[in-house]
Each structure stands twice: as C-alpha cells, then as structure tokens.
Image (cartoon, rainbow over all chains, first blue to last red; front, side, top):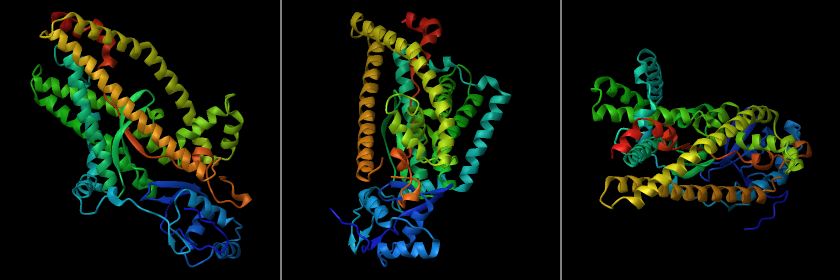
Length: 408
Length: 51
C-alpha cells in the first residue's frame, strides 16, 4: 500500500502506547509488538494526531504552543513505513492478528494473575532469602558436581540431566509466559541460540508498552520459579534419607536449578538479568549499542559505526561503555572455556560414545549408553538449527523494517 | 533516523538502536559436558569401567 504523506494528511496515532524511559520515550503498537524510541516532541505529535487535525495544523500548533519546530510529515512517513500508523485520512492501515493476544477470561491470564499477584512476588523474595539462609547455615546443601551423576553410566546420566533440564526450562519459561500474559502482553515460547548455546526463549516485547517498574516481575518470573523449586528441593534433601534415590534426585534437580539461576548472571549473553539492567539503565538496545561502541574502534565499518555512536543519546552511551567491558571480558572468557574444555570434552565424549556403539553388542548396556549420548548430541544439533533459523528470521525482519523506515 | 531533532526530524535512535530490542527471556540446559573433565578422573569413571 503506497501513501503520499503531505501536510494536508490527517493521521491517527493515538492507538500507540507511550512510555517514558529517562529522557526519551518508547512508543509503539502493543498488538504488533513493534516499538521505537523517540524524543519528547514526538509524543506531543502523537497526542495531537487523533485524525481531527492535518499534519500542518499539528506542526503549527506545536510551534505556537510549545515553540517547537518539527517535521511532522517526515515523522509520520517513517511511522507509516514501520506500520505504526492506525489510519490516514480515514483509511485504516493496521491489520491485527489477534489470535495471540491473551484473552482476559483465558485460564493462562487467570492463573498468571494469581501466581504473579503482588503478594506472590513478596513470597518469591522470601524464598530467595530462605535459600541464602539455608546455604549459610547448612553448607552441605550446596550443590556439588557429583550430584550430576545419579545413575551408573554416562549415557543414562546425560539423558536424565537432559530430561530434568528440559522440564526445568519449560517451568522457567512458563513463569515468564504467565507473568507476561497476565499483563495482557502477547507472548510465545520458542527455540533460539545465545552465542553457541541452544536456548529456549519467551518473546514478550509487548512489555515496552508497560511502565518501566511493571516490567521487572515478568523479567524475573523465571528465576522466581527456579528459586521456589530450589527451596523445595532443599527442604526435600533435609527431610529425605541420604543415599536414597529421592535424596539424589533432589540434589540433581537442585544442581540444575542452581546452575540455571547463576547462568542468568552471565548478562552479556542477554539473559534475564540483562533485561533487568536494560530496564534500569533506560537503554533501548544495550547489546547493540555496546557492539556499535566496540566497532567504532575497529577498522571494519569504523566510520559507519562512529556515526551511529555519535547519534546515540548520552545515557545510552554511558550504559553501553560499561556493558562493553563485560561484553569483552565475558565473551573472551567464554570463548576460552569453549575452546579449552567444551570442544575437547565433546569430541572425547562423542568419540567414546561412537566406539561404544561400534564395538559393543546391540543388547549390551555399553551400546545403549553410547547410543544415548549420540542421540542427545543429534537432538542438540537439531534444536540449534531451529534456534538459528528463528534468530536469522528475526534479524532479517528487523533489518527490512529499519531499511523501510530509512534508518541509518 | 536521527535522535537530535535540530534538523526537525523526530525519530530517536541510530542504526539498529532506533528500534528497541525484542524482549526474549531465555534459559538454557545444564549439559553433562560441563562436568566431563571431572568424569574422566572421578567417580563416574569408576562407574563406567564397572559397566
């Protein structure tokens, strides 16, 4: 659909959400999960663009009442390119797919409201305090790497860990999902990748339409549930007899949860804690801004990156400089660990598993132990491909939209 | 898009920063490989050789 935006056009923008983020504002369409950062005068335009005034009238009004001279037609043209204009001259332009919008009466929304009621969030905080106290007064509860080996046989252990980790991930992501939908945010869970790791992620971009302080609970919902389950596991350990399967299983689950919570602090991998930092610093795209900062020091695309860096708001620059230090340190460490440990361990493990399958009889335990390792490796590779496809698709859509809007 | 609106444009951000990032809250699995170095020299080695 091609539209000529001119000073006589009447646009409706009042459907857009507006949230203040420090000196800037995030505006966007929650139903499309599409947002953009703008300075304050843009918000004044949105408030006036209710379809009753032409763009020229809005421009003059802003000039007379606020003393601001802005190119309203240019702004609306760019919003149009991003699909953020509701109508032009009475012609409706947005086409919503409401199938993913949470219905108020749905069980997910009702359950989410109960589980993420403000009283429940206090209970989650108490759980964290209880875990710290239990570990402090009973250090034997702290997880140990031996807890990962509950069963005899590497393959059987790997399978058990895979199953437990998968269940734990589903619970973690369900926490994010229910917290998001209880606030009316369109949300879905899918496979993705973080650096070289397969990850499961909950998409809840619609939270940009909500006030800053109300985003923290959906961000921390997964960790809140991890901590609740961890507390249950610790209580089971304290009441179960040492050496029993229940005791061993509770230690294994506690290890997986402990690992999951700690992993969230690797915030350079854009974990849950990263989004808390993004919210706290009023950043729009801390990860991207840090990359822009680092690129401005490299020969590759230096001038382009420098130009982009110069145009960033000062608050974003400040946060990005600090984050880029963590980014360099984190990725260097992680890359070293992958090269020094993960790759050799994987190669050795795979080689052992391959020999077990090749050398032992079909009805032997060793054959199946090796076969499980190979099967799990194949599953991870498949999930990585699915995750990589989702990431690639997201990037393509994002670049297309930014290009259409003339972003430099 | 320019953040500074001295040229009368109203659009914030720069490059990919113009559009706030997607909120993609993630979790990843605990892999037995993280413990593999210990496997070779510890309890599980014994367990495997027993098999």
